[in-house]
Image (cartoon, rainbow, N blue to C red; front, side, top):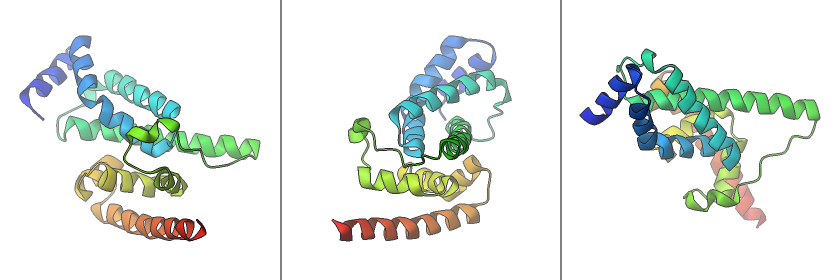
Amino acid sequence: MDDEQRAWIRDSQNGNPHAFESLVRVHQRMIHALTFRMTGSMADAEDLAQETFVQAFQRIDSFRGDAAFSSWLYRIAMNLCLNWRQREIRRNRLHEKWEPPEPSEDSSEDPISPEVQAALIKLHPKQRAAVILTICEGQSHAAAAQVLGCSETTVSWRVFAARKKLKRWLSSERAVQ
């Protein structure tokens, strides 16, 4: 984190909304990419990204600077995404019409193919989170563990299990085509 971001954080903690707006501009794409990969829906991703920044603004005083500001935002966004997923599951069970979300047409900017995105959505949310943070976002297992609130070993295991599932699903899908 550079000195400019530290100043924006300090100013935000002192009640300057313009400083927080600067932080949003710097981290907006990163958070939106994460929420899209977690949901597979552009509309839900936009809502969750916005909610991430609303919560970050409300909790800016709790940011201590022990970790990078981006890690703190990742954790807020990831928790929102995991909670969103739980609500979606309950809602879908209630309506008894569960089906995986269709990949968004807007996902053309995302380097992940629609087939991979659909397979990611089928993963358990915690495995998906580990894959997205480490593989898609390029974070270390230690950074991902900090965001997810678990050990590096747990992140490694989740990535290992997820890769195994993804490989099986994607290879069987290609065999069908």
